[in-house]
Length: 282
Ligand SMILES: [Zn+2]
Ligand SMILES: [Zn+2]
Image (cartoon, rainbow, N blue to C red; front, side):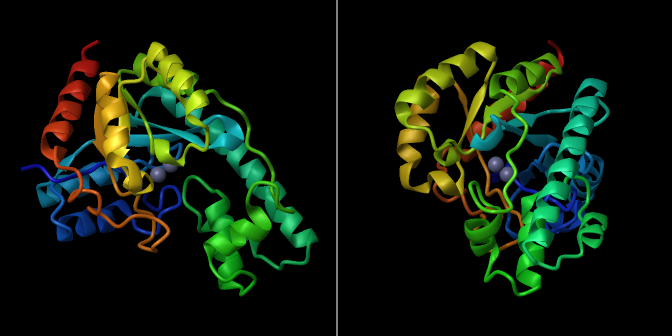
C-alpha cells in the first residue's frame, strides 16, 4: 500500500532540510510517496523530483500558497509545473513583498534593541524568507526561548515587531491553480481560526472557485480527523494528508506521522494522483 506524506518544507522556504535530505528522511520513515510543498515557491521541485527518482519514491510536485493576508489561509497546489510562466511571475512578486516585509520587521526588532544580523539571515534564508527565520535568529541570539516564544512576544500578530501581510484572496489562488492545470487543496483546515459559520460558506465559495481537495490528515486536525474527513467527503472533495515537516521540532509534524491514523491513505493518494493527471489534460 502507498504510504503518502504530501506536505513538507525544504530549505527553499522555511524548512531546514534540502530536498535531497527530505527524500532521505522520507525513505527512512517508510513513506513511499511524497510531495514537497514550499511556501510560495516552486524552486526546490526539480531537486526534489531528482531525489525521489534516485530513491525510487513516488513524487508529486506541490506548492503552498499563503492567502487571506493575516488570516494565513494556505492553499496547496498539486501537480504544478516548475517552469509555469504565470505561476513563476506570481511567486516572484510575492517574494518581493516577502523581502520588503522581512526588512520592515527586522528593522523594528533592531529599533527595539534586538541585535540581529539581518543581511546574514537573508543570505542564508533560501528562496522564501519569512518570520520563522527571524524567530530562529532570535532564539540563536538568546532573545527568545524557542520559536513559539519569539512569535508570542515579538513577531506574532499584534506584537511590537509585527507587520501585516499583503492581502490575496484564497479563491483567487484556487482559480489560478485550476487555470494552470494544478489541483487546489485547502491546507490544514483545523489551523484556520474561523468559526464554522464563517468557514462553511467560505468552503462553498472556494468550491465554486474550483477547490478540489481538503488536507484532512494534518497534525493540526488530529483531534478532529473523523469530522474533517466527513466534511471533505460530503462535499465531494479529495482527501489529502501530510506532516507539514519543517525542522523536526515538536511544533511541526514529523515525516510520515499522519499515516497511522489515515486508514484510507493509499486510496486517497491514488485518487489525488489520478486527479493531477487528469488536470494536466484540461
Ligand atoms: Zn500551512
Ligand atoms: Zn506547510
